Length: 166
Image (cartoon, rainbow, N blue to C red; front, side, top):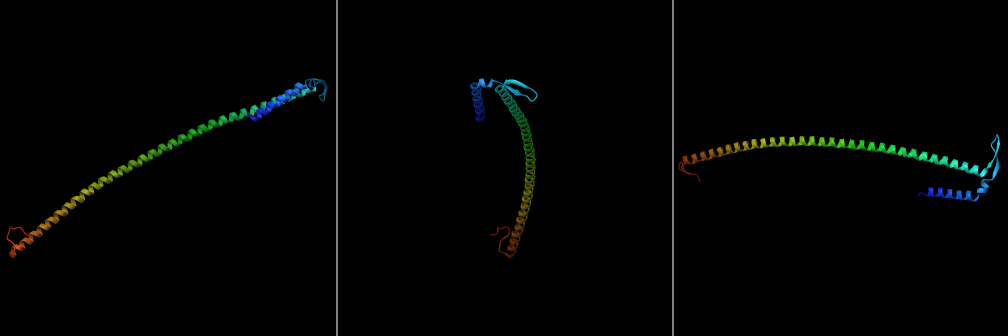
């Protein structure tokens, strides 16, 4: 129990004990003036009833305030929950959009890579063909030079025709 509630209950108990001990004084009739007229009534009982009515009025006001705060808190909690759901949906859509963008970009990169591989493979084939052609020309040129040297050697009598060169 909160300290405030304990203090209020203790105060009410002390007041009840005070009223019980002085009940005869509370019930003693007295002449009371009401501005326009006068009445005979027990002053203690009148004051006790007025105090009880004021306490009930303040208790009702406190309950009203607490109820309105509770309703406002519930409304704010619902609003907060709906805003949280909106934020989660927006975040999910951003993730979905990011995923789509990444997938598109990865597809583009894969296509570019495949195109580059195809282009490089074609270039390698072309370079290989050019290298083979160059090697063939070099071999033919070398064979022609060897044949020419052989002819010279045969003409000069250093080697016999059809004999392999040394």
